[in-house]
Amino acid sequence: MAQTAWMRMFVGVDCGTQSSKVVILDPDTLSVRGHGSCAHDMISGDNGRREQRPQWWIDAFETAFNAAIKDANISPRAVRGIGISGQQHGLVALDAQGRPVYPAKLWCDTETAPENAALVAALGGETGCLDALGVAPQPGFTASKIAWLRAHQRDAYDRIATVMLPHDYLNFYLTGRRVAESGDASGTGYFDTRARRWHHDAFAQVAPELDPERVLPELIGHDEPAGTVRAAVAERLGLADDVIVSAGGGDNMMGAIGTGNIQAGVVTMSLGTSGTIFAHSDTPAVSADGLVANFCASHDGWLPLICTMNVTSATTQLREVLGMNLAQFTEAVTDAPLGAGGITLLPFFNGERVPALPDATGSFLGLHSHNFSRANLCRAALEGATFGLRYGMDRLNALGIAPTELRLVGGGARSAIWRQIVADVMDAELICPTFDEAAALGAALQARFCHDRQAGDSTTLAELCDTAVALDEATHCTPQPADVDSYRDVYAHYHERLDAHYPQIADA
Image (cartoon, rainbow, N blue to C red; front, side, top):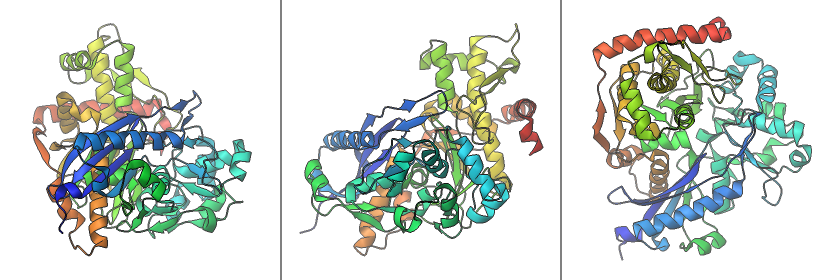
């Protein structure tokens, strides 16, 4: 008997920094039938420590899953496949029984900057890293976190039996298999992004006592299943006993799928807690300065990417300090002139990755008695976060990657004025997908693709994306020529102040 749509649904999970989100995908209409979410706690320190307990992700997933099933008004037994998207770079180190030996250190943890500097030096500096790995490891990468455990939590380090990323860990929880895929593995600092394989020599620099053949997960292809859901988990969630779990991937890789960014020409930009810009490439895209991360994609090819650490995190901090709600903040930005009356914000409240300034701090520059207003401060915060992304876009442009269209996602993309500022600063047309949980949608689409591939279906992931990724014409923005010219001058002034405040950038 043929299954009807309600009898076969696919689940996409996005385990992010702030929360876990779950969506239910109807495989026939390729539309989202239900969704749920659950927030995460954070362990923080003023020394750059940013950690979470992996159990929190499991608890959040199960809560969000149940909410999504209820929202979709379906039985859990309708689920045929699950795909996991996870925050990149985080370290999940497990003992021989599969238990975490220490809380997971996250992508935004900068406590390990000294260990990262030591790794880069051991591999021959940035040039040596790019030659060996195709990327220059940053403090947020996984490698320095392992070295930090070795130096500061030796008892935990000595109990390590497996090293995983957050999405790998959720796959392990679901299936019991210890596997990884090339997209997410690209951000570890011990993975050869050109050859798509673990780099054992790089791993030995951070963990000389650990056997990479033993502790690193098995690599699988983007179209391969991680396994099927374990009986105990299936029973707890009410699933059937043969639910497939796809390879999954990092949040940026799944976000590329969820925005239809799997062919050249489209560039995805995320205005989230952090900011990312990434595009598809058929060949490796290695930048001379290492600021563009030459990551593998989780569909095929590569996903050259830049990441800035301070986007909505910067605007939210200022808004909360000023005691403003979102509507008041937006009104203030609208009231301020383009260029914020000459005020520049270097929004490096969490350090910065692009440019590489892990120890940088936030700075308002150009303040005087005539421009010091709430409206100008708000506009400077929004423009500063956008200029940071423009700095990264310039690096992608240098590799020949220029957008025919920007697809904007993330919380900041909901702001009409911010969308127009991005279009003018980048001098590019942009539009937002109708469904803004791109990583969760991408994970669900990959689960559908993997399930059907195992059944012999030849439908491509690109064909699925063409149908599933709808665009919201109401968000379409065209750059305004006069404002493009004005922002060209304001951005040049931002760059001058950036170079003066951090001369190591200008000298690089």
